Amino acid sequence: MKIATIISTILLVIWVILTMVVMWTDEIDTTLYIKLSVSMGILVVATILIALALREYGSEKKLKDHNYLD
Image (cartoon, rainbow, N blue to C red; front, top):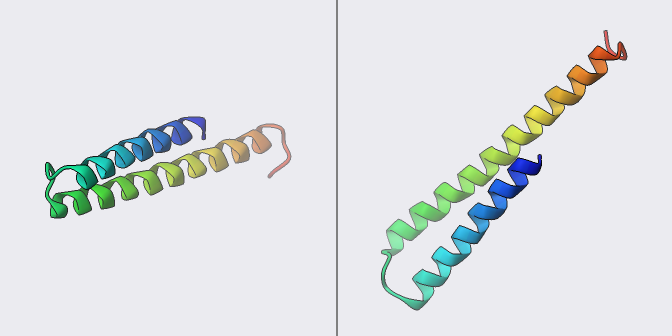
């Protein structure tokens, strides 16, 4: 989960910088900005979901190893 948090934070910082560039300059087309924003959102959600799945798998495996689950 720690790695997912770091990745999500990095993507958020990149998105904030991208948004500031779009607001203050005309370097990036609006369509490209929307596509990049949606792509980053999808990556953040996917990263968090994968981290949650791995954490759940690890905790279940740990419980099975200690014979708490059948």
